[in-house]
Length: 206
Image (cartoon, rainbow, N blue to C red):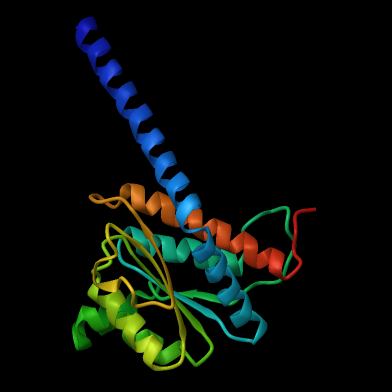
């Protein structure tokens, strides 16, 4: 029995190390190759907020959770050491009546597009999050937003899927396979963007 436990521990420790090291390498690659795009995303959001516009965010599954996470850190706060006003960000993933009603009446692929139609206006920003780049509900929302005067941003994975090249600015996490490592990088990028936007408005840690 002890041998079994020791073998399992050895295997699990190897997995832990390999996973953390690989996740770190992905972020290092993003730092080398995508710093400019991340900067541009922060600038676009800053410009929108300065002009009295807002940020809309959408995604499915874990990306829906990321949308809510990001919106909350803009509206409530990101760092407790930074005292600032709320910033206008809305996750399109939080209204269960709108999501279920839209899916029932219009088809799920049209849910986020419909909410962009309801809440978006020229000068706003839509951030679409899709680890595959193929989420049709996000694809249609980004397409609608571009056609109606919103700026568009995308956090993607794998090779970018159908969404590659659709948004004004995109970051593709170069991981093929499960969404887990991609989502870890997406939230790291989002945290950087939030801090850059805060600093653009002069809000720094005390």
